Length: 282
DNA sequence: GCACATGTTCTCGG
DNA sequence: CCCGAGAACATGTG
Image (cartoon, rainbow, N blue to C red):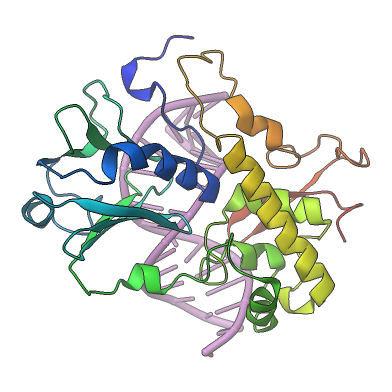
């Protein structure tokens, strides 16, 4: 069935990792930053909200958003009274400034002007929206390590030196570096020719430098390509736009390695599926 | 009808 | 404290 009804039009498909979150953030800046929240609409209280809908409504109305920043997979809206609104997209979260058709998966709407509404949609409700009063810290944010795009190799090396877990597991650990998820971890390890099972604290500094370079190259390339953003209504045949083109190993078990043609291997780390080439990743 | 996919957080052992 | 395994969360897809 090629046709997809309204709500999924122009929304993100793949699980949001750093690039998808960054593309989302950039797409929201124009409508959201500098405008005042006039109306707040939420669904009934449920686990989607780390802060109760009542508090969200009371505290957000009348506030102007001064900055929209990203740390790892979090989008943080800074408000003019010093409060912050923390947004995590979880597995299927989407935030858009475009009008959406009525949809049971929309949980929060912020009217920021007569013409624009910031809409939070999340089918699985693994996403989170949390209100932080002025000056209040967030356990969620405090747990995060440096953002994957800004950490340097020395800092990463110091962090990895304390961990004997497989490097794949360490890359997924948001307290080591924030923003890398399962897909980009596999892609970066492949790019750097590092075997996912290698203990993190056994990587030499040159390898760490190479790996971090691969992580950042892959993330930046994906941001440039629009992340995994797919306009379903433009690609109703299931083609996932630019993102699939960046895939070299993820989801390709058994297929030939793009470098050496050896069939790609598969394993599990931290409960996540891992794809790698056992010949060119050492 | 059941396995699978995913990020985060938690528990239970070793 | 460190680590891994596994579960829970929700639900669409195959």
